[in-house]
Amino acid sequence: MELRDKFERVIDYLRISITDRCNLRCIYCMPQRGVKLFEHKEILTYEEITRVAGIAAALGVRKIRITGGEPLIRKNISWLIASLKAIKGIEDISLTTNGILLEKYARALAEAGLNRINISLDTLRPDRYREITRGGDISLVMKGINAAEESGLLPVKINMVPIRNLNDDEISDFARMTLTTPRHVRFIEFMPIGSRDLWSDKRYLSTDELKKTVEKISPLIPVRLRKRGPAKYFRLDGASGVIGFISALTHHFCEDCNRLRLTADGRLRPCLFSETEIDLKPALRKLSSDMEIERLLRLAIEVKPEGHKIDQRDDLSSLKNMSRIGG
Ligand code: SAM
Ligand code: SF4
Picture: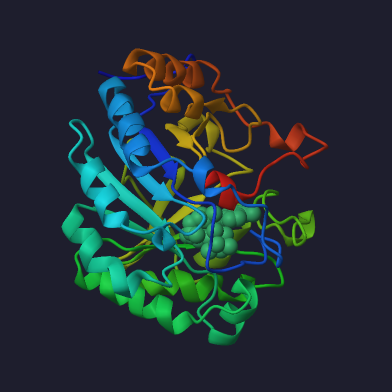
């Protein structure tokens, strides 16, 4: 079965945030004091998450990404991965993490059936990492990356958010990583969402600017890695790794959007930037039938907007933190 929205986009990808809590406080994502957190009872149980994923898979969802907050701080995550893996129709399970706890969990995650991992890393310099994450230790992330590779969670994808006058002098260093390792490095445009203490147009770097910087190393050769999804991929001449660009604000983002998001407190979010959410929790907690959950999933796809139109919005204050939506 294939699930299409009214703009003929195939929806086959569900991003599930399993917690809004985090062990870091990245300056572009969360305020230092943290954010108001859900109460524990508001957060979906693993059984509830697995139920939603099963119904979504029967409708045509094939890929799941686990995210957060920081997903690795939630207990028994391997149990969740194994339960999702057992769902008929689910072909690929991935996870986005800051990598701090990855050394400890990589093997168990791989054994539970995790296919791939994305690690968020915005600098390669220990002092700058401490500054950006407000106290994080980059050596733990590096150990986590190695553990992921040793556990076969390949290819490891590194997500970097380039921000002017913060880490934009490291764009080439990240790109060069693809010359010496098979890692995928993905540059994600900084978005006006989350802790907007840091956000300003002046801090923002477009994909076009990022590409120009990377092309000083060598021309970017287009690579087709996936049928759908927001990233556009390239390779530097002779590289074993791949470079991706995720242009949230400029081109090619919405037209290829293939996803729904489920927040940690059980709301379906058809678009990262939309305020529309469909609350599944009352139906889940009332033990409503699978048909009712299916109806709500279909409704979320029905109201999925054609594009985020964020450039036409003056007031972005209602946009939630990424740590609540799951990035
Ligand atoms: N804690 C995990 C991590 O950092 O990978 C998963 C959740 S985090 C919210 C998911 C992704 O959102 C990270 O790669 C992070 O860099 C990205 N992110 C957070 N705020 C962002 C912003 N304002 N613009 C662009 N990306 C952002
Ligand atoms: Fe935490 Fe990830 Fe946000 Fe950093 S980007 S504060 S690691 S949720």
